[in-house]
Image (spheres, rainbow, N blue to C red):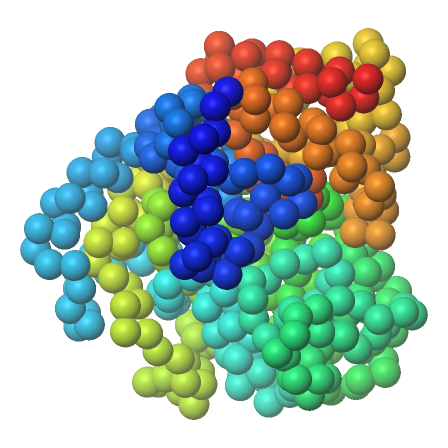
Length: 430
Ligand SMILES: *Cc1c(COP(=O)(O)O)cnc(C)c1O
């Protein structure tokens, strides 16, 4: 497989952007080698600048649940942009997308659109603080919520700790109000509320943590969070930027049937265009400007082209059996790999939920918190990754990234994908 053109383009990019990229993980830092410059996508496939073809499981990091260049989304974008790309005034496209979401999502009553997942989370945190009049936020180690200052934290040592920032440029005072707790640790959450009585505004969690491996949580733990927050008058925020519209139209909220106070959305919601959103009850959302005291705004928020793309995408997700079919497909892929793992007696696990999967080089029956991931396993992942890539299988370049099955993947492609995964396991574990 030649990567000459991608190499040249990456050299050029390095003279333009820090590290040659506009988002760090794209740089292939953790797997080594040259990032592929993607020139085209169609259905389940992408092509790079050297003309190499890949079956894609990255899906632009989650948004493309319908595959690349979906015709209905493409047409909606083209038709809408003909009338101008942005007005900064209310448009009917905003009404249409919001109506579609709210009338099919029984857990929320009002929504506000923004332009990214990070922005959605940042606004949700401000809303929670403004609504409760409290400052502290509980987050979990291993959950990613975008690059919001106060949430770029890693746990200190000890059960309930205030975070240390994991990024330069974030003053210590910005993370002083952030409490970091290990996932799946109900007792620690209770202890935090005891220690900081009436100070905690919200608990934020990815109900399906999928940015640091796939750390599937026990439904019992999520229900406990709901109960604790209700008892303590704190808000529960489900960050569904990745799980929203992915495991079901109502996301993890619907899957577990747990009603959080605020839901953040992103990725799939824009059909591949930059859209994020946060949604809640009418009562909570009334705190947002111009109705309430919590300020939040955006020049390009509710952009009509992005709204039209989102609507064209979400309409397709509402077709009967859409999610059942996605799950069935994913199961097929997963079972073809698990069969191979079992046969070869590899110490490898493949976890999945809905159309998300993650391969972990471990023999633990489950991984529910980030400390259970063996960092050494990433050395094996590197070998595994390059074998995938060289055999025409594209996925995010890190062992902590999950894979996404999309609606355009055919049975044959998934069988081919399983074959590539299995031969790559053989290469990596040889
Ligand atoms: C991707 C993601 C974000 C950040 O969204 P951006 O659009 O990249 O800013 C936040 N939370 C979760 C759970 C995500 O998966």
